[in-house]
Length: 343
Image (tube, rainbow, N blue to C red):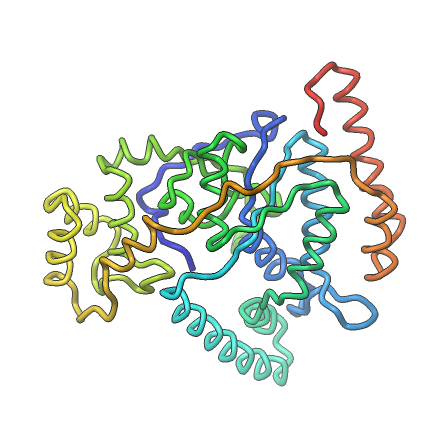
């Protein structure tokens, strides 16, 4: 779910050229789940190999990131570790929603309603341990670094950016801002066009600066976390009932400190809260991260990539080879232009 700050946060469009030679810390779970949700057949069925194993995540990782690599963007993939205990309730709620979506999918299937099938099929997406391991093996074969976070991947990604080992966190969620990432890059891995009622709209990468957000909203870093808690996070889904982003911002400007903000919000809420806001705040402030990671880029092991995709999962050898050739050409062009080495 993530924290909903879209109504308050300003974004600036950036070009792929502006991101050339930049290292970005990718929220791996967020990105892989995005591929599982969006890369599907017209009836909502995910891509699968001849053994019935889902391959949507592998397709997204290989083709989307091969395109980004060919444009000089260098991704580090940060994987989630142990979720904080406060997140367990949200994980259970997500599973319940998936089960309900599966029932609705079966009903739509019985009626042969393709749009409804696709809609509910996307909502049943699950990221399994096997998919995570498959993803890591493919990324390592592509020569891309994988970092294992002790807890939340976005917190570790934010930490990597804070240390100067990456330029920005790449994620669709806003949580990395609450974890202190100086820059958040959205839409990096989305398809270039998104379907809307009237046709298609172009999707471009967008950058959010934490410094500018804090200045614009007149908040400290801790107050930004308070804002997230009031509107709801993965640790307190739903937040304070009846308090949206703008009202939450007004409360924080009026009350300033955490204790006073929580007390005022509880009085203003339309229903009693069922969480300890101070515990949620402490979870954000004390989320575990590690300095024990390596950021080493290397040449892709093309033989291993082909073995994983074509040999194990029935990908088109011609299409995989074409994608690898595109990357080779981009590297040669960069080298001839005297640009910074990629790997």
